[in-house]
Structures are given as C-alpha cells and as structure tokens.
Image 1 (spheres, rainbow, N blue to C red):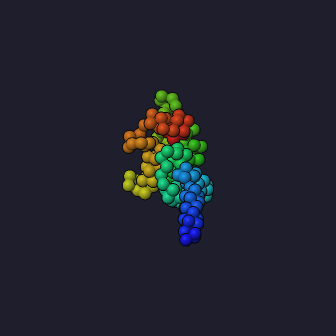
Image 2: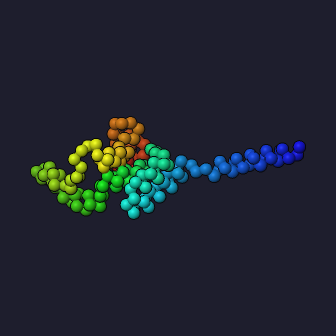
Image 3: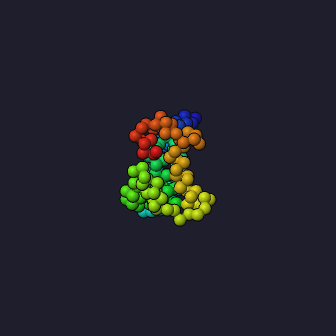
Length: 154
C-alpha cells in the first residue's frame, strides 16, 4: 500500500523530466539552421532542405526562411557568389544602359517552367516574399520581422 504513492510520485517526476527535455520550436529551428548551413557549405543542398523541412517551417524566424531559400536555390543550381561577383557589377545604372546590361546577365539553362530546378527556385523565392499570404508585401515583412531582417529577405 505504501508503494503506490511512491510509484505515482516517480511516474509524475519521470513525466515532468521527459517534458522538460523536449526542445522548443525555436531550439528545433536553430538546430536545423546550424545543420543546414553545414550541409550547404558542402553543397549538400537536398540534405539541407530535408533537415529544415523536417523541423517544420518556422515562418516566424527570418533566418530560418533565408537558409531555407538558400537551400532551395542551391538545389536549383543558383550560384550566389557568381551572381554577386559577376552579374551585379555588370549592371549599368544609367538610363540608356540599364536594360542592355540586364540582357547580358548569366542565364539559366532551363527551358521549361515546370522543371524541378525552376520549382525549387520558386519555392525558395516564395519562402522569402510571402509572409502571411500569397501576396508579396514588403510592408508585411517589415511589420513581422523588422526593417533589418525584412530588408535582408527582400
């Protein structure tokens, strides 16, 4: 008879211990971001996507969304370094040269809008621009994430 209260106390203590060890959503997202960045540094794009998506989309975390977009862009074959080092400097900001300079940027080899690379790139872009609706809004991003982070995402 004296063993039942002790067993109940131990059961409750074990239950509380198990619950207290569970990771919060923020901790899960942060861990997924760290692992995904490691995968991305090794060009393991699909592994990065898998880790991030398995943690559950954290639309409240702009860093999570930025890394997720980078992972999808990576799998689509987008090269940020080439874009920043080659394409951006080639843009001519003068009124007469702007359109011409856009026409000589690096082009995608995709010829169909339903290719897997195009779809991956679109998923990445949508993760960044569609905050709470399917309508892109910089104002919504500013409100939700603040101007600094929303500027990074924009």
